[in-house]
Image (cartoon, rainbow, N blue to C red; front, side, top):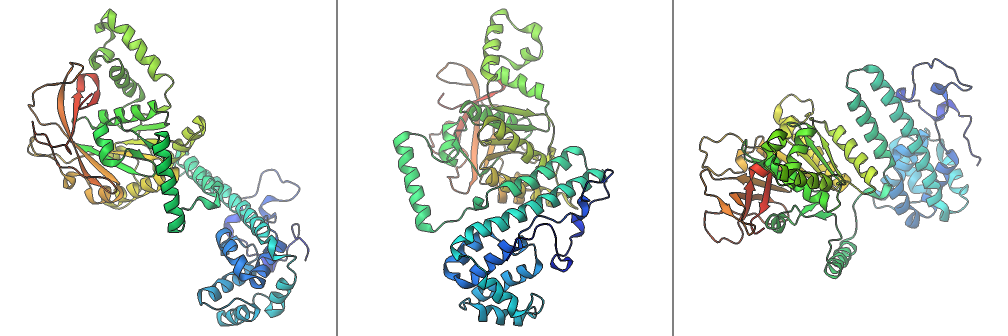
Length: 484
């Protein structure tokens, strides 16, 4: 059989209307809208023939690399489908079984009859090269999909129904999906997966560092309960208005960045300069009001502010001062990882209702779709997503919040691997840490933990070892570990 790349029988390929672009203003040598899409009929035939000649060794390789949509010639896709229908019926794959299945499907004549199927089997140079041929078929399929993605991007840009960032983000996501290695899926036999876990456990004991993507939140008691901020997880941080949830999120982002993990912090409530003011106040530390009014800064505090700026300057912490859509978040997270040469470690979404939620009929549907896609993004990028959410207004300030107080609680809870609730009892006396600095006692409850430990609310003055307490210094824009 010979390679066919420049000419094609029109009956061999059904032109997808999406493959046709509007006429170009400059006509190239071959009009692009009628150019033959990339393909290799010879490689497709070799793959199908090898599948029938040596099914035991070939089928696992082909199933991993190809799908019916990867075949350029529709008849080849039909034969591919018939072979796997034979496999699914627990029948040995051979020419007779494939011919009978095509008969049952009523499509034997459509593919060229048994003569064409037999010719493919006889024309295989060697079934040992099936991975090469399957790779070639896959490569041509990816090129065709790239053309479709580019033309969709062109149509979306011409339509003008979405903002540029949405169009670009959608196009980037489509190309990123095509560029991902085929082995991106997470699958393994339990024995192999168990061995990897044991090796990772031994390596962590030996080297003192986790082998998975896991970063400390900066709060040992929280890390103890949720095992740190781990890749692929969504952690929801919720509190009432003015209870410090954004401040706590800013602190966690800072701690991850200090460990070298790239962080994307998206705020729908504060501009980047406001976020930077909080970081300067936290790192100096100096009263936040002084940062906003430089004339009140004492002379001796300027040196501390300068040192805070030097500390913050090299951190891989990108701030965004506006609400984003899912596609924009994914686009920025991938760009950040590329810039720093390692995947983004943490994505902070502050807060949920300030983001550009998907267009849906009801708010709950919009929230549900957004949180589901955030979870998918966390798993795709192996990053932790810290989702800041607001609690419903409680009639009693002393009341301790619960999961039911989360706005649209069912969707957020279902898509979160852990939910942290913050509560600062009103009127609590000042507490003092080992550094002698005053702070307010703030409580954190791990209300849900998929693979960690949930906790109860502490009580003032009790010695419950599982309770999580933090020292909150709102004037310094920071939360400190209880024992720090």
